[in-house]
Amino acid sequence: MTIATGCCPPASGGDDGHDAASRDDAAMARRVAAIESVLTQKGYIDPAALEAIIETYEHKIGPRNGARVVARAWADPAYSERLARDATAAIAELGYGGRQGEHMVAVRNTRRLHNLVVCTLCSCYPWPVLGLPPVWYKSAPYRSRAVLDPRGLLGEFGVTLPEGVAIRVWDSTAETRYLVVPDRPPGTEGWSEERLADLVTRDSMVGAGLALAPERAAA
Ligand code: FE
Image (cartoon, rainbow, N blue to C red):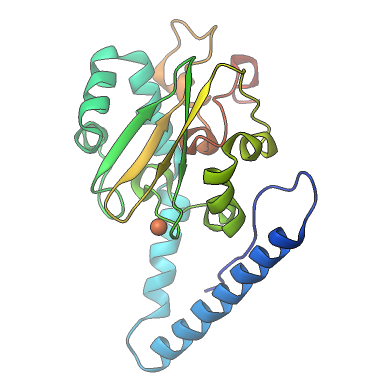
């Protein structure tokens, strides 16, 4: 198994803190690889089983699940209410749940509020609806800047919010995982859920992006 390392999307170039954080990530990856190697040699873990879990979450479970949840919430106000009240149960209605998604909270963007999700401690992420976290989500620069400068961080992802829009940052934990319900793009009235789901990107469900404009669907 290879543990990838990396950091936030490049924008303004590296600086000392940024480089130091990247080195921290690389050091962490080496430690994880060393621990995995020892555990494998001692027979405590089976690399094939690990690979099977990663394969499942990378290719069989992924952001398409979350996109279907968001599309349902956009299309069905009653479902949207259930999702806001008890996201774990509402997500289970669509057949998704389990490991790393036992306690879900859905946070909805509005014209006045943008939600951004981070795990400041490590990399907690809602696997059943988004799959495995991207490398940048686990990186030290993302985890710190999401708290210190969320607006600047969003700018690096290409998200520029209007002045009056507040940003609320949600810190994931091992207990609670968040799913952002992005704002439904205008011009999508009457669309089927399947079509709507094509507008819902992974990053938009973390809050690091916005839903695609209708003309960019399935481009
Ligand atoms: Fe975590």
